[in-house]
Amino acid sequence: MKKNLLTVVTLVLVLVNLVLTLLITMTIVPEVKQANALITKICSAIDLDLESGSATSNANIPVEQIELVEIGEENMTINLKPDGDGKTHVALIKVTLSLNNTAEDFDDVKAQTEAKKKLIEGKIFDIVSSYTMDELQGNQAAVREDLLENLQQMFGTDTIIDVTFSSVQYQ
Image (cartoon, rainbow, N blue to C red; front, side, top):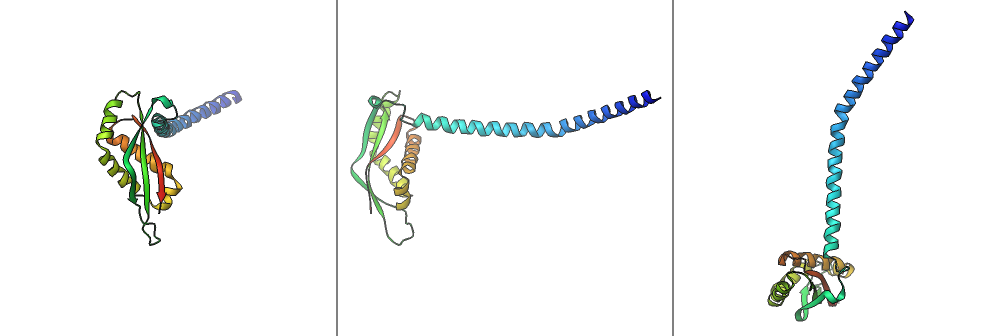
């Protein structure tokens, strides 16, 4: 009789264990799948961001493959965004674009940049004027990156690989 009772108790415990395992599987597995999908999306977004930054970087392009195009004959005078001190600030900037001369559309992009310098100057005015003097002085790299992204978007190409301020003065 004792053996039979132990067998029944063991069977009941196995069944309770099976029910709890099914309950856990039904409730936790969908949540884990959703979390896994979210993590996958975040990782792919990070990978895309890293890849896009490396594609537009001129660090991997030899100097022989870079051609410079100066925008404007002299420094551009750009009114900067007011920073709250009551003074009007301006920046005198000379901008140079770096083009990858081994890109497939290099000749087209170079011809367009030469022909549309006034349009490019307008884009430069729009972007630089949206920064205060402190922002411009403190983080020129962010301004140049913003310009680069906008110009690449305007021309629809990654042939433009860098924007350089060859001369900058603030007042």
